[in-house]
Image 1 (tube, rainbow, N blue to C red):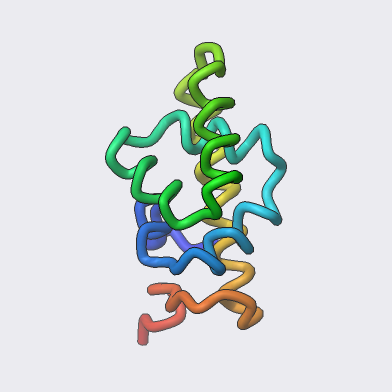
Image 2: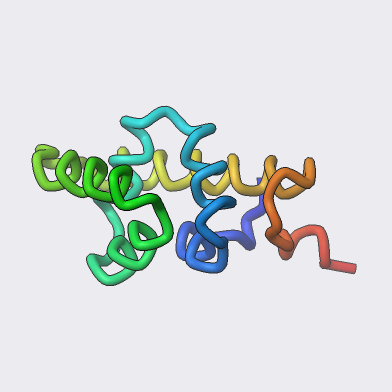
Length: 102
């Protein structure tokens, strides 16, 4: 796991890579992770997804009950861990800063 990668780094991914990451994380964790983001960032991420997926996620987020900070943090770490794993295996185009440290 890279401690240098943050959930906000998902904004750097294109739509196909973002979908690849989200597909590898259980949907409840994706919802918790998105629930805990700034509304502007959430909108930005959702615009990278197919409209039907984005609308479904947005509806589920809006219907989502309260989420603890710990749940949000854990879910966002799971997404970041998945991003790093997929990046290292070449399945998504993202340069993990940990891999660039000399």
